[in-house]
Image (cartoon, rainbow, N blue to C red):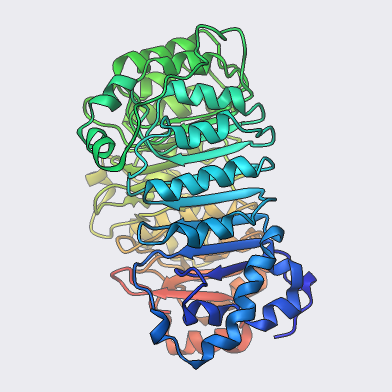
Amino acid sequence: MTHHPLEVPELRLHIAQYLPLADHKACALVCKAWYDDFQSLVWERLSLGIPVRSTRLSSSSLDDQIQPRVREVNDLYKNAHLVRHLTAWITHDIAKEQYETLFERFGHLVTLEARASDRDGWEAFKKLIQRNDGLQQIKLNDSSRHWRNIADPDLHTALSEGNHAQLHRLDITCETTVASLLSILEACPALDELIVDRSLATRSEIEQDSDYKKQEEEEGYTSLPIPTTTTTTTSASTFPLQQFLVKANVSDPALIDLLKRCPRLWRLGFNALTDMVHQGICNLLQAGLLPNLNTVHFASQFLSCPRHSDILFSVLSQQVREVEIEDPYPDMVVALYGRQSQTLERVRLSNVPNPIGFVGFLVHCPKLKQVEVSMSGQGYADLRYLIASPWVCLDLEVLDVKSLGLSKEISFSDLGAPLPEWILELAADEKNEDAPGRPEWEQAQIVFMKRLGEMSKLRKLNIGDTESSLTWSLSTGFAYLAELSALEEFNLGARSKVDSIAELEFMKDCWPNLQKMISAELAPGERKWLDENWPELIVETKAANGSEQE
C-alpha cells in the first residue's frame, strides 16, 4: 500500500459510523500503512461518524486484534491538530467526554460539516466553532430537527461573539429568523454565501410552534434571544452577501430589509413566499435595488403561494444568466426565453408538465450553454417538437432531457403540427436514397441528429430514460454527430442503444474525449468489442425499468 503523497492530492480518511475508541471495526480502518505512507496528508481531511447507528461493541466483545490498533487510535488524537477539513456526526447515545476530548484538539479547521441530535452535541460544536476562528465554510445539518432554530444561543453565540472574519459560506439546516441572520451577517464581514434549509419564520410563529414548546420543556431550551443588532439601528450598513438561498417557507417580511442591504447579491433562491414577502421582492427588483442579480432558483410552489413568475417578470430584462425552477408554470418559461433570451446561459427545469415549452430556449437563446429538463408524470417530450425551428444555441455544452423520445403511433396531425416540407427535404439529403419514403417519425429523427450535430461544443448528452426510445443508427442520421468531438458523457436511456458495432466504431473514431456511455443492455458482440477495443470507456447498461445492470 505504498503510494507517493503527490499521487493523492486530496485524501479523505473515513472512519465510518463509529468513533474509534472501543470498536475494533473502526480501528481496523486506521491501519499503520496510512500513517507511514501519507504522514500528514492523511490528516488533512477527516470524516468521523460518532456513530450514525446506535449499535456499539462492549469491551468484552472486542477480539484479540484490538490491542495492535491502540497506537493507531492514539495517533488520531496526536494528529488532530493537522486536520483542516472535518465532517462529524454526533448522536444522542454518545457520551460527551468521548467527543469533547477529541474536539479540543482540533484548532486549525478551515471547513466544518456538523450534525448532532441533542443539546450536548451542538454545545460541543459551538465550542469547536468558537475555538477555530480560521473557519471559512460551515455546514450544520439538523435533519432530526432537535436543534429547533439557529436563534437559540448555540450557533448564534458561536458566530456573533466569535472572531470569524474569514467565514464566507454558511449552510444551515435548522429553523431561524431574519433577525438572527442579520446578527450573524454583522459578525461575519466576509460571509458571501448563505443557505437556509428551513423556514424563515417570524419570532412569534416559532414561539407558538407546539414542537418548539415541547422541546423547551423537555430539553431545556431557553427563550429565543433578541439580537442586539436590528435593521433599524444599522440600516445604513451593507453586507457583502452574494448568494442567498432559502429552501423552505418564508413568512418574515423583515427579509426585504435584509435584501436591501445586499447590493452585491447575484444569486437568489426561494421556495414558498407569503404575499407580503413576495410583493416586497418584486418591488426591490422593479426598483433596481438588486442590480447584480443574474441567477434565480425557485423550488416547488404551493397552491397558497404567489406565483414566482411575477418575480421573473420583475427582474430587469436581459439580466438573468442562470435559472432553476421546480414545477414551472408555462408563463414562467415564456417569461424567461421572452425577456431574458440574450443573456440566459443555464436552465434547469424539473417536473415540467408541458413538454413543448422548453424548446423555446433552444430556438431563442444564442448564449445558452446548459439545458436540463425533466418531465412530470410518465410522459415524455416528443422529439418532433424540438425540430420545428432551427436551434440558435451553438455554444450548447449540456443537453439533459430526462424524457425525450418519439412515438411511432402518434402522427403529426395528432400533435397539431404537420411535418414541414423542409424536414422532408433535409431527410432526403441522407446518403440512404429512400429517406423520403420512410415513416415520418424516422425522418424527424434524422433531422434531430442534424440539429445535435451542429452543437460542436456539446460535452454531455442525456436524452433518454425508461419512457423514451430512439434509434441510434448510421442509417437514421447518426453520422451527423461526427463533429461532437468534445463529448464526454452520452446517455441513451434504458430503452435505447447504438444499433450495432458500426456505431461503436464511429463513436471511438469521432469522440476521443468520451468517458462514459449509458444505454440499454448491449448485445454480447457489442460488449465484447468494447472490452477489446475501448476498455477505458465506462459503460453502464440499464434494464427497461430503469434499474442498473452493470
